[in-house]
Length: 152
Image (cartoon, rainbow, N blue to C red):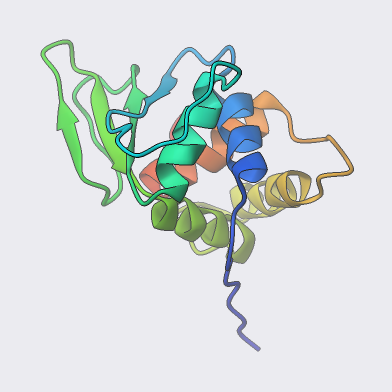
């Protein structure tokens, strides 16, 4: 039997949790919200709130891979700067598709990676558990950005 997961909604809290956990202390990943037009940003909003609000308003965010060395992966639109960093343009739909791939195991990877990413997805989805850690969130982001694990 084959099944397919469809994520129908991500909340601001969901996005902040994922993006904050993935980028905090990351050596290779950072994000920006270049378009803030029409966003209801307050003084108490952290950078991850701004990213989430941008995504939920239909804007994209930019996720930068500082370890890329001019090598881009996956199918997301991207640019490469003079230092070899690759910046991916990411929408809310891209995040949903990447998370679905983590759960369904439809990304590039072996069975061990697919099993681990499904567990990472469960940790992300179970808000009461607080088990999603930084390496797991980074792994989810790698599937969102690259459709595979590049950095382990």
